Image (cartoon, rainbow, N blue to C red; front, top):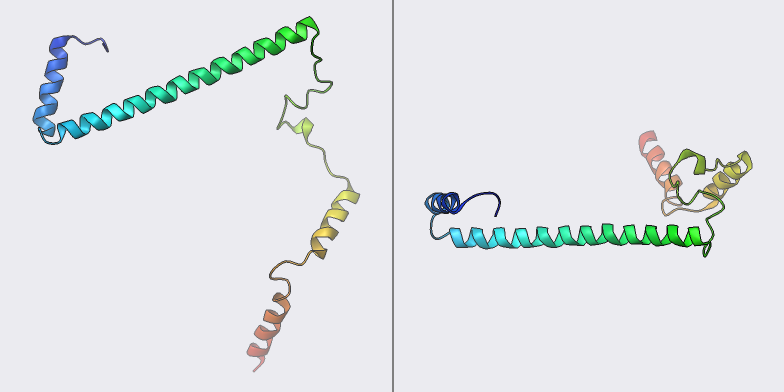
Length: 125
């Protein structure tokens, strides 16, 4: 267990009892046990996820080799986030997008001119 013998383990426990005290030692041991159990669960879940993804990839490769499924025609699905996948909008699309944004009334769009007029009249007088 952890590469330490019984003597070392007893020494660590005795030091913990002296440093922490008999009242707090059970609480700390319980908290450490819960933490280790949660870590173990998370580690197992991670390993299971990795194994499952590995099996899915192997099955997909096997089905591709056997010709039971077709490979996608473009590799855009596998290279998500690369610059080659991003299509630049044309000038017409940019103009149309800016016009549609200008036409949509926002929550402050009706109150903004009124607030400018109110500010202008308060500075004039």
